[in-house]
Image (cartoon, rainbow, N blue to C red):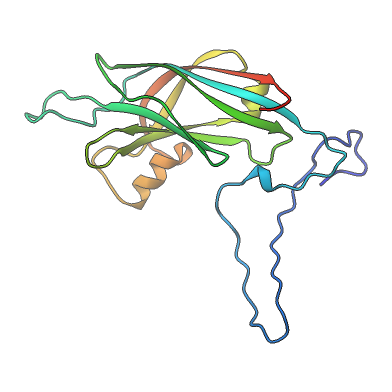
Length: 204
């Protein structure tokens, strides 16, 4: 939606979410429910007067430190974590290599490349830290970014990004919620030295 009284017709003023149900005579009425799944910007209809700007965003991971011990030794002392990161965006799954923490540090030296366009409805992107196990990998915690902030504020900067999740040795729905959503988490689970970089492009 645009503001007809505004000065910039290329600026999005608001978004209108619609649910449409088509029925014929004799059909039972269907109650429409809100879709709570993450927003997909590819499904947004933009008026032709709004010209999107495309970016290629680079998330660079150098090292992590103070990650929680997930794989304890048989005698109950020491242990480590076989750590890797995952990011799901635009039906694409990005994953780093798996590295075992030594001396409370993990070294990745890898990057994720995420395409982005402005204006954008949902600029939030979540990255998750996992521990690789033989039977089933375990979600450790997560951290999030605003793509708008990456483009406008942190572009090219080095910084430490904190990871948050649920307390260790607990389970249940609240644990899943906290491990998947850092803003609801109660426990600090280490940090990652990173750099974000965004560049304009015609075809991200």
